[in-house]
Every structure is written in structure tokens, then in C-alpha cells.
Image (spheres, rainbow, N blue to C red):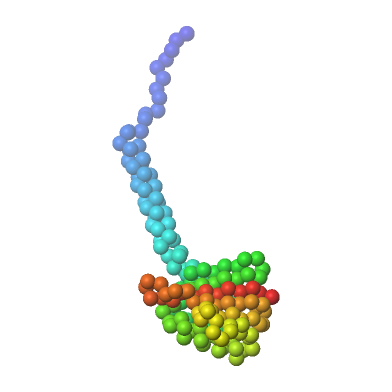
Length: 157
């Protein structure tokens, strides 16, 4: 048996192979940078988008006669089961003035106002009527930045 010299195909030059690897690595790095930029943009703009979305949709369960302040910033918006609702926001408007306006608007719209004269909690209006068996508007103490916190709680019928 005799063996013959076998020639193998010539290998690609190392420089050419290294250039292709570097090209692929640069594309991968570019893609990684693009994905990172996208994720950063989502993290920055998503909370702002959700806040605006929450502010655009007035709570369906709130009486339509209540006009919410234009500068409100939603803090909480919760539904517990099918009948409990909680909603709170901050505003720069005078909370006592808002409470007086809302109490009068609710009274004129036929809601029963449950607040008694001389009530200890002057910054609360309790009401019922038109789909709400027990509703409450509470003004929390003003925050350090001067914005008032207003809370709505309701039990729906």
C-alpha cells in the first residue's frame, strides 16, 4: 500500500477571517446599543405616559357634576372588587374652595349630603345617590410642595 500526498484546500488567510469577525462584533455592539437606548426611552417615558392616560380618563364612577382640577396629578386609582373605589390626586387649587364647590354641585344634582353642621372633620364631605351608596371626599394635609391631596372613596350600589 502506498500513500500519496494529499493536498487540502488552502485555508483562508487569518486576516480575512479576523476582519469578518470584527465586522460581526461591531454589528452586535451596534444592536446592543440600540436595544439599550430603546429600554432607557421606555423607562423614561412610560411613567409619564401612564400618568397622562390616568388623568385623561375621569373616573366613570365619580358623579358627572364634579369637575376635577386641570392640574391634578393622580396618586392612586384603585378598584377593589366590583363595588369599592378609591381615587386620590394632588392639585395646587385651594382644597377648601374645591370642597365647597363640590358639595354645592352634589347637592344641586340631587345627591344626599351626609355631613352634619359642626362636624369635627370640616374637610370631609360624605354623599350618596345615583349609583353610589356611600361616597366620601377627604382633604388630606397639604404636602411640603404646597399641593393639596384630595381623596375620593366610594361604595357603589
